[in-house]
Image (cartoon, rainbow, N blue to C red; front, side, top):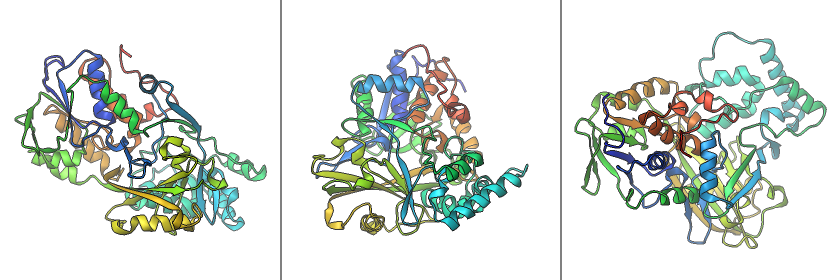
Length: 473
């Protein structure tokens, strides 16, 4: 691959989400101006954008929170929002068996009915006694070996089907890293004996959230730091000619490139390209759609919700896998915090788990009443529904092989696919990871660093490993 130097290359960036903006920001920091960001929407942010509904409620595309693995990201967030942050201690719960159980579930099984608690404890003891040196074949087998039959049956398997929308037996487990709390049997037993509530695990046990404008405010502000004209909105890609290095847009316009940084889903990129030999690999990638349902309510949350951040729902009685008390993140997420509050639910969809789009809002409200999150449907004053066709990049059993084929092949044409769906690596698809994929790619092309996030997820996901972006902050 022979690429011209960055300051002489025509650089096109597809997508003004965290990854595309991260790449553009880093180029701007380095004094490189010969780039254009092409965004299909009329706004920046991608899946991290925020929306204001007609009643004045602010909604994110899912329950985003700000925590970070990188000093560079933290410095940038501080610079963009200054003192316009609200800081929270995470309070997450699992709703099942008609009760709230502190998260992580596996550390708090004492809150289950006695018989189910014993089943979970027996399973954990069996796991410890019967460890196997043979690697698990899939995510379901990893769950069974790591947590035992009880925790798998009552929580892990039903919840993971609900969130991924694919059976865990069809998923790999290499993505897990920090995402799932491993079980410490001694800790679990002491929690039972000493009647402790154990809620401290996790990289996001504290987080921050913008005071105003939702998560999208971050990306609006970052977009505004770029030179005038650096982002062209309303530019949806119609085709990519990899051999002639040309992008054609649905409005009929075209643009040439030497280097293309694409943050659009790599399956869509390949489908719209002339690289027919890559289409079989792209077809092997699996994804789920995400329905985000915002429920604006009159009054105030019940006392049992006043300090909660989000809740997980593994049981079939509710359509959603997670609900966020979104008005607890910022009082400005509702029109008047003295009169209103809000809940935001997420529902997954795939060929293995279909969703009736026309009914999902109604089903969500009914589920919230069933779970006693709200008293009655009459309290609802506003609803908002957003379907992200690309919601979760599924870590399917064939993912690594497909990505291992696609990304290097694209690079041979000067096309660098990065981001949540550009690289298709769920384990490095948070906002901080996504931005840093763009930053680190530019560093690599400028010979100022390596792509740690893309190539070594376990390294960046270790507690507070600072992956600095280069010489300039």
